[in-house]
Image 1 (cartoon, rainbow, N blue to C red):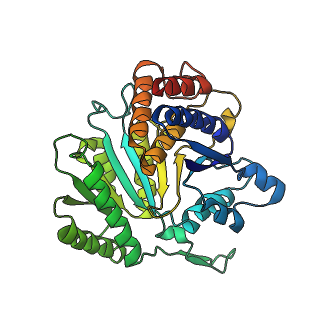
Image 2: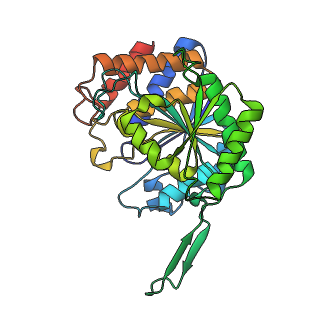
Length: 358
């Protein structure tokens, strides 16, 4: 029995979450486990009613669950930043979800904007540190609103934060790298940084990366790429990459580029992981409020988030079945991943995947 907290959120979030839950329940029935779902209404509508985002009492309640499934956060009537900081970032920081895991995988039948690239070329994972960098809010304003205004926002990392992220990345590479997936290549972990300009933070990252690799993970090849070069090679030669580890800000940027080359936000899912605690899984795309209630939004990213959740919980056979079902649907059923152009409604796409899993 897995206790799952469900936060459908805003806009089309409840619609895609319903399909993810449908597939999750089909997998549970097929593979002999149970899920107990508890829904929470945190999001824009609740904020409009109560001016409450994610209270401390909710954080303590969420600690009691095995995982969290999130739909989407973002409401057109709420100024940008309030919900994102008050719900998403608060959950990540308070629950110490220090890893953001982002698979970048092109499924059969899905179009990529990259010429002459197919599923055999785009299949890698980004491990993004999720608790430090400029996202901690360290900084502030002086003389705000005057011609002499100064804004400072500092990127901050401790050796502890860097080491625990690197440890996760090395161990993930051993277990899920290309060699482990039967692709016949050496497992490779690449550090993405900017050592030629950010000479303090990424000097720390690079030293820790090589020290840990040499002493504990000598079976894994190590590479280093500047972040600008990483973006270039994502486009030109994505097949070079296996697992990439990077800081919070660079990870935020390169994973959105990764989502585009794997076919767009409609297929991209991610996990905010605390390997020793409660993790949260979500589709990468936003709440898409203009499509709310129309039944045309693509639910596959949310379904893939549920797939990642099961993999993290140790239900590998169920996770594999969901991924294979999604690949069957993209290859044989959908006309497009775009909202309104799939050839099926949101709930029909969920049905196709759930039936294939069953």
